[in-house]
Amino acid sequence: MIYCYTCSYIYKYASEIGHLFSAFNFNRFDQFKILNLGCGSCADLFGIDRYLMQKATSRPISYVGVDNNVRWQNTQNKIQEIFPQYNIEYIYSDVFDFIETIKGNEKLDYNFVILQYILNEFNLNCSDRINEFIEKFTANVIDKLPDKSIIITNDINHYDIRSISANIYKHSMNNNITSQFLYRFPNQPPHPYGGENHKYDTLIFDIPQVIKSRFDIKTPCSSAQSIIFKTRSK
Image 1 (tube, rainbow, N blue to C red):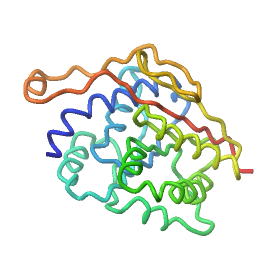
Image 2 (cartoon, one colour):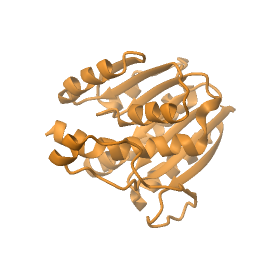
Image 3 (tube, rainbow, N blue to C red):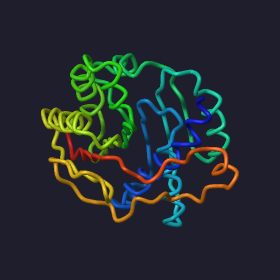
Image 4 (cartoon, one colour):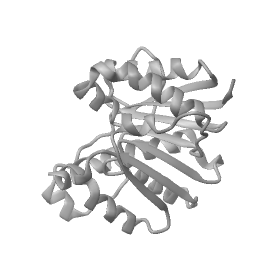
């Protein structure tokens, strides 16, 4: 089931991240030190790698993916084989538990934190803990990130999910100087928080025919995206 899900959705989710990196021009970062909460199939890593290929450049990448579903393990082991040039680590933990481990004056070294289709999972499966997540994610992650770091949310274009992203940004301003940039894809419903349309909603990968013939490849790109830029702590 996981393999079917991955082959059907990874091109779409990875393309959404690839479009976002192209739009925001993250080339100014000398290296990408990424924390993904709820990483699953690591679609964001594939999107970032394709973005670098399209720019005909490269960056050192360290990637820590947190996920509590050990059924991803075979897929994630294969991803490490696909990208031997990157330093990839997986932590099999509940996201709430992982965030709880970051306490005290500990500072984080990541310059990117990515929430990829996890807010919708919270909304569906533990909506009563969303406010708890926002508060702890802000205090234990955003507040401890270095200056000039990036927090990315890529999720379904739905009011409830956009509201969670808006609240994360609101809380991020308590102890930090932050700014937010919003993106969406063409032919999708506009949302009340504003934002810019990407030029294209197409997939950025050439999909092998054997994959096309066996799986329902999801397209076009359709997410709502938030970038929070942390200038510095207050």
